[in-house]
Image 1 (tube, rainbow, N blue to C red):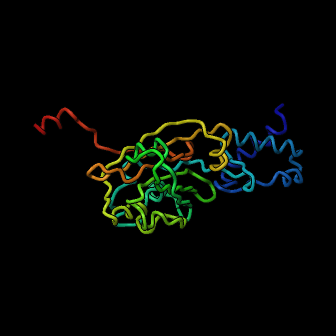
Image 2 (cartoon, rainbow, N blue to C red):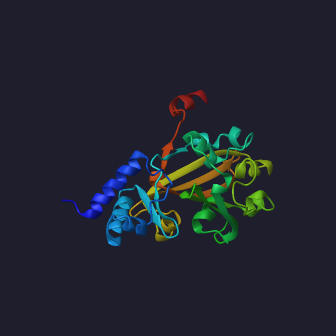
Image 3 (cartoon, rainbow, N blue to C red):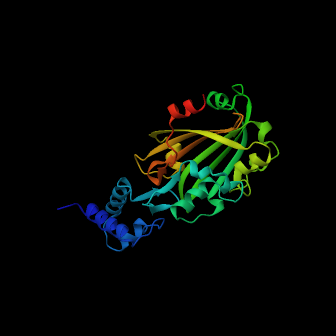
Length: 264
């Protein structure tokens, strides 16, 4: 016979899968289930820990035990940076992902902190400035409802963004069209990018900030953004919860041999 905590965990898991508890909804407090005769405090706690280990819920101080979003967001590739979205409209990158996923959004689901910091060796190399030089760091935490999905910190050379909305710490995108529209209006139209992805274990601070269950990995993104003249106008480091995104890329397949012949 399965232990009582396992029976309770299986019953709650079935209710979650059936939709009795919706994504983002908080499960009853442990004391409520104890009072309802579902078992002792240790039994309910063990059941909740099992659900967390199985990826069905997240638990954190101040938020309780919350049902996870089971369908990952589409994290678009090049399509999320389509100029028509941010130059001619107001669909910044994280909003483009929500629209493509058929999910709602609020602009204030992106919070941010702007500070002037000394460039690390990695940031300095990317931006082409001396190590330790002053740069702007624009750190964002993006949530879907109450659930964090990722962090993103963009670094800029001061002469590119000083006095613009990019150094305004107001929550949400940097005005209509977001950061790329700000750069565009300042004369720095983005032209091409390089994105590098790597998976790794989360740090303790990341696990706390992103409300990760035990063992949940993250995907680290490094994005370098260039103008047509190869000036780097942004270097960004993102940390994405691995299970909350499905990465999607749609692109034309290159033929370097044929393209090389055409240029002769």
